[in-house]
Image (cartoon, rainbow, N blue to C red; front, top):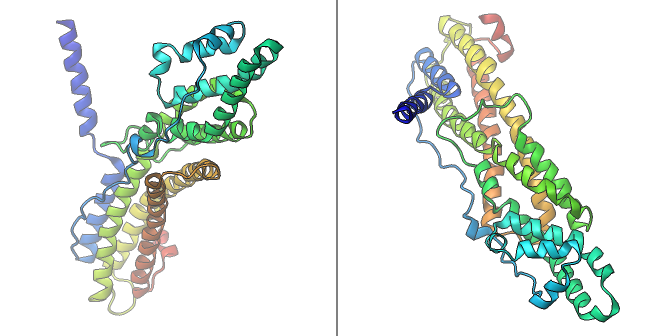
Length: 349
């Protein structure tokens, strides 16, 4: 009985959260409705645009061959740390691990292999040769393993999933945890590709956990809301600019003063302020993504599907800025008809 009551309470909480109106979306609705009344024009709400979808993991995962160390060689390695690493790698869990596990074992191997080679005596030259060969193979595979663990991993995919409702306050007032995590990953990636700091493999899993908690999907959702609102608002302004003037005498009338108030209170002080924070978040997130992808692209031919998706992100960011700039331009033109300017809207309240 207690479980049923708890379940019903939990379900009611979920319903109440999902039904809660989105503050930014409500702000856009209020703004476009106010514009429509003030300008005496109508514009339909555009259909929401599809969001850039990260390609499937199968489409962007690099194939990576596993090292070949036979059972007899493995038994002879039990006296060094590498033997334990190989034992874990060859266990049931190790053989069925994900991309992050594959990178983790590769880094552990590279961190431990030199010390293991040093303790082998001259009679074990074949084993030394096998380990050196495996080391070269791991070094060569490292860029692909890094890409698979990050870009093709579930944590990165969750970072970019847009929720039906904002899971966290957006835009973020503080630095997105994923931006910090990607910057951390990029530093480690640079070191690993340079043959350094393999012992820092322990930092890999916590970084991925932080990436999972990031706000990439929230940003995409925010952009879609903004672009939809801007299309509707710009259509209203264009209709008025292309039709009868708002101020026939060239001086401000009541409608012009109301328009100036709406523009300042809802757009400049509300929507534009939020968009500025979102743009800052976008720049930080894409800068880290482009940086680490670019470094991997020096050593790998990145999957075309991933490159196309990354290009979409960049284009969305550019469209986001251009649409806001267009709205500011149109608003300024309408204010000029009435002898006003955007800078004077604060004084018109």
